[in-house]
Length: 126
Image 1 (tube, rainbow, N blue to C red):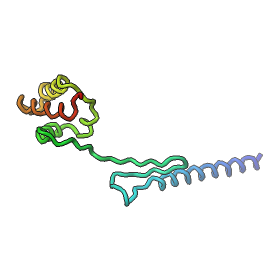
Image 2 (tube, rainbow, N blue to C red):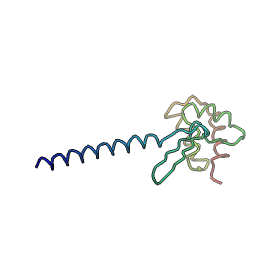
Image 3 (cartoon, one colour):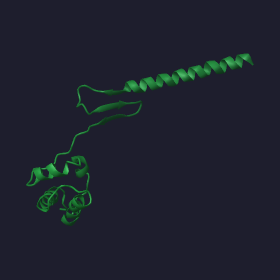
Image 4 (tube, rainbow, N blue to C red):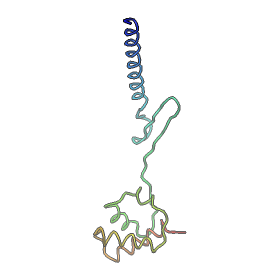
């Protein structure tokens, strides 16, 4: 009975050590590579390699872009706005009006119209 207990103890310690080694190896496999952009991480494993780039989207130059970015980016990121579907003018008007009336965005009605015009140009239904 004593030999079986020793065997189980040794086997258990071996399994714990093997698991710890796997964890430390996994941490070494997640590395920030210096030759890529600062927001790129490479995660390596036994099967996969993943590269994650994080770049902010760019909105096209058009009349009203400066008004749009100056007002809307106070609360929203370009990524959030770019992830919205292309909407018709009526929907963009409702969204901008909601920001003004419900969330108290400090935007007057003429500025709101210019923001809607820009959004329809770059994110409107074609």
